[in-house]
Image (cartoon, rainbow, N blue to C red; front, side, top):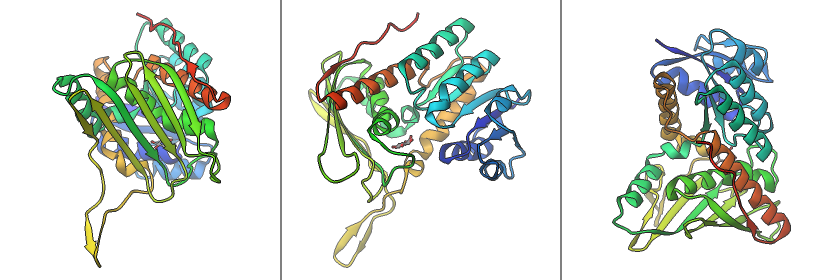
Length: 326
Ligand code: ISE
């Protein structure tokens, strides 16, 4: 049986998910898509046989749609995920799960009331082979306990309207989630500062203290211009692990050596997105998901919002999360 997938939003990520579902995922097909721009939705649906529907609620209600991907603007996530839960349909929501703690908790509660696991959050880095290998090394124990995780997250330019809230809640939230996942601990305290240079709002430096004591540094630099660059180094008691760089071929010419950078995250995380969607489709069929769940989405947003407060107040902010429902 092939699952009918409905996608809400045909922007950068919605269109990319449509392409992956239609061409690279087994056990599923693209059934329907909507976007505020019909032209964009038509372009994303082209050649897949998917229908273009009027809006997100029409996608959720469509009988041909068994499961939904939410790739609409961040502020619309909560209402759409709640509508999927009301319809009893599995939903993969792009990160962040929602933009407020209250909305995230409403989703966690609504999902619990269904008695099923229906929500996965699109933290695709959990499927990236380099991060997976880093976690396997840490969990293998040879290097001893994790002491520090250094992260760099640079974009060429903002993909959306940009201010510090977005830099933290939409971009650095990836590192917040991946660090929670790698270390297996929540964060308890955040200190955040920002460069006083001429650039609009960044770079921003976040220092997060995890419950186990390990420190995580995150540089988020949205206007880095030269290329999309994500790095990570995990420092442990007896050694370090660095994420493998993902570049194009190495060019040696005219006395210099050069490699290329992608202009955005899609090439860097292409395999992660494919594996994420394949795992989600398998999870729906088998009722067990490997990706981030609704509570992870809550924890990441709550931590990001504490970081925004730390930036605004110029003071360290303590983070306390509600207990994960059992
Ligand atoms: C964007 O929304 C993403 O999810 C990308 O992975 C991230 O690198 C970028 O900074 C975000 O704006």
